[in-house]
Amino acid sequence: MGTGKNASFDDFSKIDLRVGKVIECEPVEGSEKLYKLTVRLGEETRTIASGIAQHYAPDELLGKRIIVIANLEPKTVMGIESRGMLLAAEDAAGKLSLVTLDDENFPDGTQVH
Image (cartoon, rainbow, N blue to C red; front, top):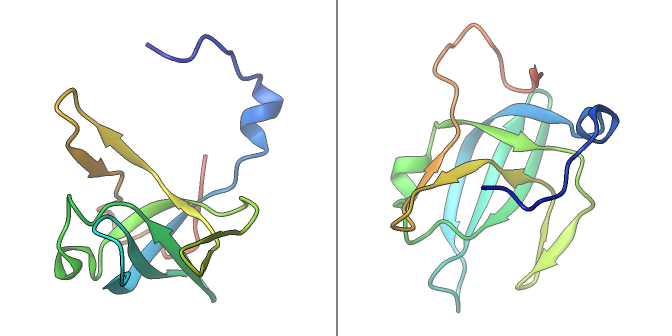
């Protein structure tokens, strides 16, 4: 497993992981895979484009508390400025499962270590 490249502790410490709550989700016109998500990270709201439409229905994502990489450079995907990335696991068959947080004591925007 893995890519063969090791990340140093300093590399990992640059990644800003945050708890986010999905407050809106809509399919992206012209794409079978892409959703446009609105995610609340504490006081801030972000738009994130994610290719998870074949794994989740929009209503399954509403209210879900996910883990977001919050400090990636913005990237434009099909005309959407995406300002983050969701963390997910993929099994051998290609099924995705988002990394979520089920403890409500950690508010949106909480940093993940």
